[in-house]
Length: 466
Image (cartoon, rainbow, N blue to C red; front, side, top):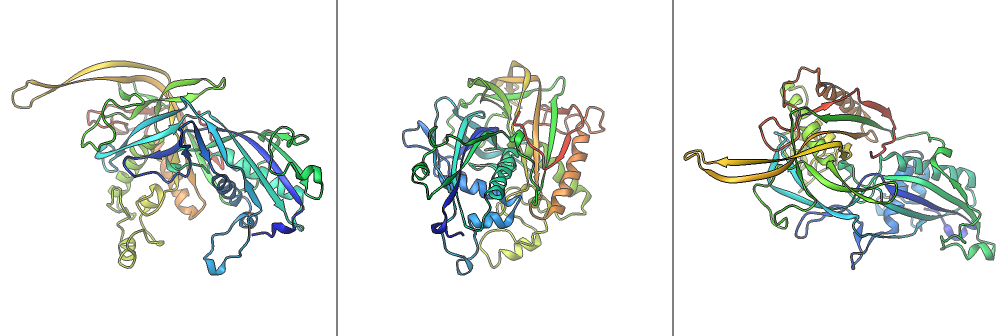
């Protein structure tokens, strides 16, 4: 922490942002919520992003390029080792008006063994549509030994990292939620010894920002990344003759209760704000679905079959490898820091998060068809139920996979190699049997997808959210 009482200069910035991917507010039913600190205001007309959320985001981005500088903003050592003080970074809370941009997205919990819907686990996420504009305003109080040009360059580098999509706000990191894009940044310096400039310290209106430099990320040099990541851009389509079940933004049943059975809907109709600011309905294949059904399930199946790596048999709770079981004999919950399970390192468990995230895929040139099905009694062959559902029968889509190599880089490199192999198996000329790699809750080989071209792999790449 810095002694800001001795500071007489401030770097002041106002950043115009937009949601590259949807923002997760909260999820679940009853009193179960996600790990989000972003909430609606009491009247439901605004979302509130407090200053701590912004400061934490900037701090995580700066940690990727300069660990010493990020520690000046705040350190989380044990209290006996912690230096007391006030952070030199102050971020203004944001209140963003919302109307139709907020919608409910129903979601399935996906069985990690079979890739199908998991009975009795239904989550409904409160989502803010991608494309919504946001504003991040902050002041940084310079100490006497800090050089203004160097600090300014560090913050611009941090915004480059923010725009890349490796860090997020609002929870749902693994499912591609809360990624932000930077439109421009206005930045200036204030001399607190000057009475006229000092009155602009807590203001971010046009008068307070007059004379500020206006920069786009095209003017910002990519920083030297110390804690890297990898992005994989994948373009795919629905295989001819296949169907993906569609669900509207609000399901036709009471989502406040937990159902043992529910629709096999892995494609949803959601919303996105276009460049003109208009809200558009689009078909969306959620990143949660792709991550679990297309990546986790087949990779776990392969590794279990080969048998060389430690793959625990936990399907959604804490890791069950020998190290973690021994750890929980002394700790009521959580996984061991020496966990051996490759699956849990990659995709997470009930005790830790994973290192891979997948963004939503927006379907382009989609075609749909309403199909009527009947359920017959096995004994009398009488019709006992009728299903009428809309199915996606044609369409192209793209999604981004992000692998965080911040800790234990060897795990990220191994996952990158396995995903290269997996995507190769999803090409039209691969030797995988029909229906082996699919999205859907039925076992009738519906929902098979096809990779259209070689995925684009970039070290410390930037996702576009398209």
